[in-house]
Length: 123
View (cartoon, rainbow, N blue to C red):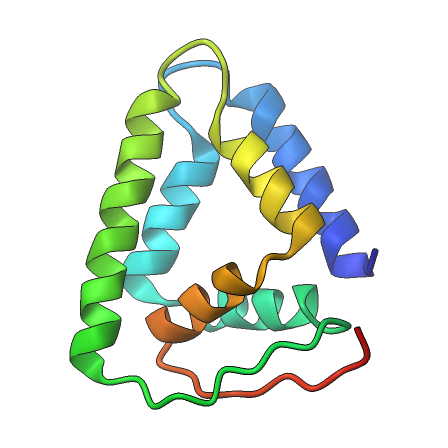
């Protein structure tokens, strides 16, 4: 487990605690990231996957990125609606992604950010 994973787990643990109620901070941040693509989030994902080998060498078009962003935004919006229930769902999903670091998540973020970066590291 790297430092970025630990920091992310702490942040989402706090979000799980304060997320009881009508507003999910994790979903709001997720929708903002998908809509505005801040540089800090891409760097966070790169740091999260720093010691994991993932190849994303495909060219990503603007239309493909935009279509993926729309689908992600709608998915996070659905999570936001589900999170209104008394059990926070978003932090649980975030915990799974942070701990398991699935390749699909890195590739999804790479498409959203139109990145073709290849991470080569020891698994």
